[in-house]
Length: 147
Image (cartoon, rainbow, N blue to C red; front, side):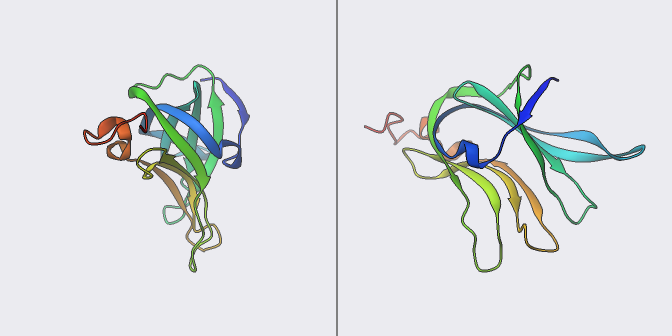
């Protein structure tokens, strides 16, 4: 897989069209000959495919290792284009987050989440979640065009 330059979560804040998401686990080299399973989420916004990979750290802590544009990666789970708005997840009184939320522009529900939660804690955690049931295109009682 060819990687382009890494991108930041902040660069994905704003309006987009989401039309593909895959989640899977891959083995990553963590040190020397040591390999661990890491979560991966790949998604396509506005025709550009992004891949986020977990840094599994030590089994108790994890974080997002990188987010990059994947020029030759295929996304298998493709669906009708869905309007989303990217926003940074809010911090709360117990956690500082560096997480992107993609919110369905019609339903107002979070469809995809990626990044690191609890960045200021001893136990940060990688976040990669996809809720297709929150997309307007998957709800029979919602007009996906917003009208």
